[in-house]
Amino acid sequence: MKLTYLGHSAWRIDGSRTIFIDPFLSQNPRSTTDPATIDRADYVLVTHEHRDHIGDAFEICRRTGAVLVSLHELSVKATDEGLRSIGANIGGLIKLDGLDLYFTQAFHSGISNPSGIVLVMDGKRIYHAGDTGLFGDMALIGAIHGPLDVALVPIGGHFTMDEVSAAKAVELLKPKIAVPMHYDTWPLIEASPDKFKALVGNHSTVMIQAIGSAMEV
Ligand code: NI
Ligand code: MN
View 1 (tube, rainbow, N blue to C red):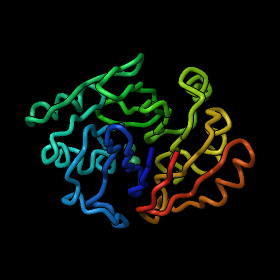
View 2 (cartoon, rainbow, N blue to C red):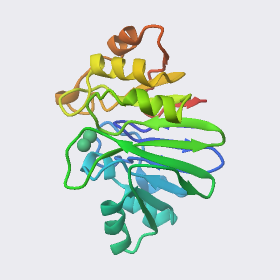
View 3 (cartoon, rainbow, N blue to C red):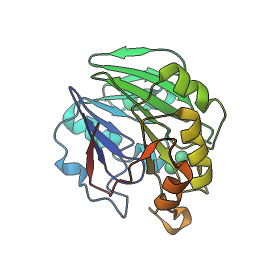
């Protein structure tokens, strides 16, 4: 499976299905991906409605016919705009064609509830933390949905965990690989992925991804 970092909290995952998560592209000053070039997607997953996460999600769904999957309120908005959408909520297994999902809690604000997402595809288990502060039940996410192959965690601070909180999150989640995200997009969330990596130490392998780069898991 290939994971491509599209900057901020945006990811493209290519396996038996093509998935985008939080595709904030056209308004991201550091993005290297023109959303108009995305011509195929099966699912677009959105953790919450803040514009740096919903980003170009609706446009990608409109063009590719991909199904938008999110918590209920955002899904209703997508359906109202004529898109294919599946609304879910925080809790148990959401079984889709070629993809298993679990929405998890995230400690963050919003008109509608924010979430994290555990996705299981082709036997790989990936956790996208969304925007969140640190919470102790990340240990539960790691225990119930693990062993996690990859945890994608925000480190930029101010709106989310910083390097210190995110390193503790990795200790609780126990993923094989941890990848920092949601930093350096703007001066307000400047952070050091190297500091994060040093703090994680030997708890997990930290892979620092350049924007536009891909990793195989
Ligand atoms: Ni947010
Ligand atoms: Mn955000």
